[in-house]
Length: 307
Image (cartoon, rainbow, N blue to C red; front, side, top):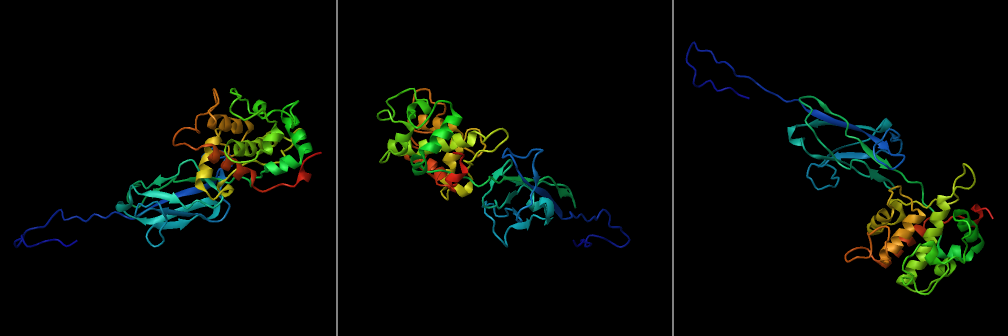
C-alpha cells in the first residue's frame, strides 16, 4: 500500500498510516470409518483404506474439479488439511469424493469457517460406512433347494415350511391382494410380471432375510449376509428404494421390512409403511426390481447351509 503525501507541507508529520494484513489460514479434519452406519459416534475408527480426496468447492457445483477446487487427500489415520485459504473462502462447502463401495453417513458437507488470521478451522470430519459384501439367493435357488428352504424357514419360525401360505408369511390382512392362495414355494415359481413378479422376488428376499436374522447356533453367524451397498446396483433409483425399505437404516433387509414393503405397495389394510404404491411413488415393478438386485448379489454355495 502506498501512502499519499501530496497534502503535507514542510515540517508536518504524517500519522496513523497503518498497514493491515490477514494471514492465510487452513482447514483440517479427520476421515473416519463408521463401523455401525449410524454417523459419527465413539465407535468409529480412523480411515485405514485408500486415500480419499477432500476438496473445497470453489465454483459451487458440488463436483470435484481438479485445478479449480482446493483439495488434498487423507493421510495416516485419516487426517487431512488444506492451507492457503483467504477470507474469500469463508462459507464455501467442503466435500469428500465418496469412496467406491461406501456409504457416506453423518455430516455430508462441511463449511469453511473463519478461524482468524493464520488460524486453523478444525473438526471438519467425514464418516463412511463400508458394508460387508452382500449375498443373495434367487427364487430359482430356493425353488430348487426345498430342503434348505424348510430348514431355514423352520429355524426362523417354528412350524413354517415350503407349504406355508405366502399370505400367512407376509401377514396380509386383505387376502384378495394375491391371486389364489399360493404357498411360499408356489410364489417362488410365479410366472409373469406385475404382482407375480413381486411374489417371486419378495418370496426369495424374505427367505434370505430370514436366514440373515437367525444366527447358526449360540454365538454363531448367519450363513447369509443380506445387506446392500452402492455396489448392489448401478441404478441409483434401486439404491434409493432399498434405503426406503430399510426402515431401521442398518443397510440390511430384515423379514419385517420385506413384508412391510410388499403390503405397502399392494395397499394392504394397515400396511406398516406408506412409502410405495401411491401416485408418483415407486410401484410394484420398482419394488420387485429392488428385491431382484438383492437376490442377485454374490451367490453363496448351497454347501454353506447345514443340512
